Image (cartoon, rainbow, N blue to C red; front, side, top):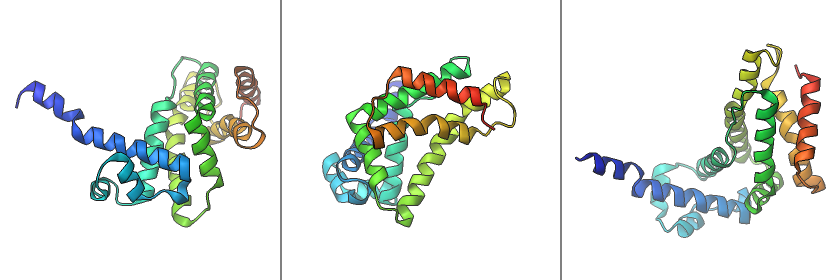
Amino acid sequence: MTDQAVRRRTGGRSARVRQAVLDAALQALAEHGPDGVSVAEIARQAGVHETSIYRRWSTREQLVMDALLAYSQRELPVPDTGTLREDLLTFLGSVATYLDSPLGKALARAMAASDDDETLAASRAGFWESRFELARVMIDRAMDRGELPRDTDPMLVLELLIAPLHFRALLTRQPLDDDHAERVVDALLRGKTH
């Protein structure tokens, strides 16, 4: 097999099918909420057979979680600016942009409004745990640089950082602007959360 053939196969049909399924799952989630997502509808939207989906994801919940994680990793990268304040501002800016987008609004509202059956609650917990593990590197780096005390609770810092944006996006529907993000970050850093 030539180098060119190997390169072509790594992204080939399988990657295109996977992306089409994930995109269809996000669209279905935004339109119908977590309770209304069906594998049959996702397969139809993606132009694949249901069996193709079940070969890659054994449950609907795994598919939805994979779609949310892939989207959030793409849309909410974890910055490395060299300082905690800039990392947090950059990250918060990405979260605000995401929550302000039509798909971000729809996904956040769908997840907030969905019923809490056991499977969905486990999927949501898994999603947030994965996101926190990715984002906590900002806090770990800050502790290594001496910007935060070693006993800082990374999960608490991230919850305090993100919660005000979700509050505005879901409850008060106030704008998610740069000035608000700066005030949130500065208030958080003044508190040096343990």
